[in-house]
Image: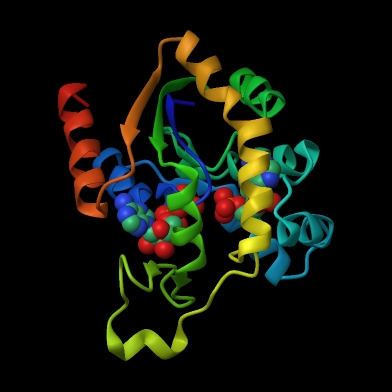
Length: 209
Ligand code: ADP
Ligand code: AMP
């Protein structure tokens, strides 16, 4: 399999929002473990049943479940030319297993302070028809689709505290791990969606990709 990219950062940093442009630039499909898990929960699969309570309380789903999900996804045809991982890996163990199956060319880390994260997560809304991500204040949806928007069950102030704790304890050490390998690029995510997008575009131009 060709080299892949990891989009890294705390919950609500803007990974899903910016994944769209990176997929467009690179042609790599976005693989979001969060989206895949939500689909499994929605379809009430065995895997979804195991993951549900962890997700609702804002805890990380056990590594064996995530590795099963990812291994299956990477067998699909569109994964052969490299993929864009969004929200994976989230533990050192996941990263070690990933490194044994896929080469990673770069890790893009979107940095946002915790106090901004809470505002972003509580105001996040999704369009179930297109998967588009909106925000009540920062990215309002067009009027004609406002009635069909949904809010994620874990996008509340209680779960967000657990999600931030999981991030700081289990996930953020990964940034140093990738930094020590010389493949991590940090982006200031604490600016408008358009400005973050501009930085990402610059990054790809500078890298000559
Ligand atoms: P993640 O995938 O990292 O969890 P999302 O892309 O879903 O994050 O973004 C979380 C919420 O914050 C969404 O409602 C999105 O519209 C909003 N958002 C994303 N990027 C920004 C930004 N740069 N400034 C303000 N709000 C943002
Ligand atoms: P996200 O959509 O990335 O915010 O993920 C939503 C929830 O899914 C997280 O709070 C976790 O419970 C679970 N999850 C998603 N990706 C992972 C992962 N790589 N490892 C463990 N849990 C995950």
